[in-house]
Length: 310
Image (cartoon, rainbow, N blue to C red):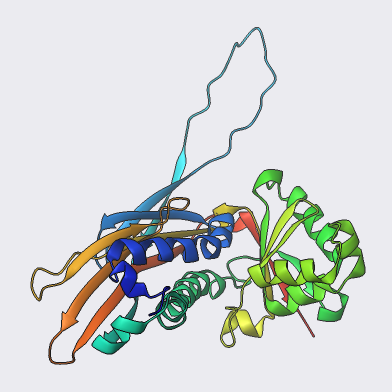
């Protein structure tokens, strides 16, 4: 008798929900670091528009006793995000599989594809839009072989000149850019890595750490075709106001049986509609998770591109 059988938990929605949240949390960290996210468990449908506002910056003035304090108007830019994509993962388990599936198998056949679908959908919407016609500033443009710690230092300088706040700086890099940076021995020394296992561990999690004040993440979802690919996109860097992402969940079905629960990742409020239903004609118990999302350009001045020319 398998002691780690998922059936010991009864394939209960609460159990699957807990494992889903545990699996998704690290994946969502870079998304919330590089984009304004309007995620929630509100019910919506494809084609709906979500409105998010980006506050305009204030300026500091010198006090003049003859004039007194002069108030500035609190203004904000409306960013409309249309929900255009429905992303889902649906897996059916036979009666026999339900009786024997382990937690590891559940992760392999259901949770891992779910995580892949979530990260690909959300990252794709950002990276495919990171083109020079919208985001004109290239923080780095040059050969892959020349991309190193000094390049990141120059990127930091570029962000400072663009008045991007220090505590909001983050970069999302391709495996090529991320791997090239890790190979720089000064990076290992700078981050005080003690041995190669630490580098490997951090690399597998997709987070290098902070380098010159920039949080550096890796993503394996950079475009392989289209304008961003042609322009050599291998990274984006800046504050989170460069892009806006909105996600919602769909309504529960009113017919057909089964149950639906909303799973909410507490840090980002990213939500999934989790459905569990049995199809008698198939003899399978289905687990289905889905969400709808959209993306829009935020403040183009708050984001810059990393491009490899060779």
